[in-house]
Image 1 (cartoon, one colour):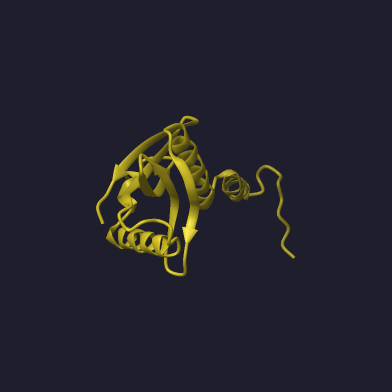
Image 2 (cartoon, helix red, strand yellow):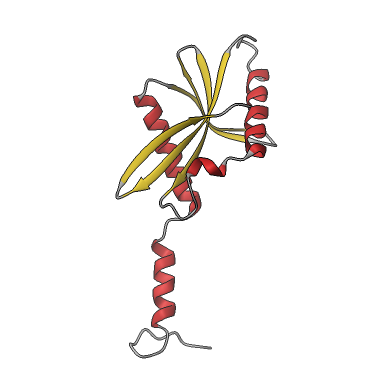
Length: 143
């Protein structure tokens, strides 16, 4: 069996350093979950009532459904901790927008007490994490 030595000069410092970096680097999933929690808290501070988080059916999922000013809002949250992959909202393409629209129809169909004339809005919440702070940008989109 091959031994892993931690002694300097054993030729595996680079490997050991890479393993440690992987252990302490947040995953995309954990960054996304943190962004969704931060976005929900931001919306609450802005006066929204959070109705649902991670609402899903077999085909689609939306991160946050909230209510404010007689409007039900469907939010997709995209979080970045750097600018290497562009702006967060650029990750929401036409296919994702259609799925959010589809999940909104499913949401209303499963809640018959919501009237057909209910006002609805759709938006991406772009969360940028930098220097221990979160910056939020709400980008509305049409379906």
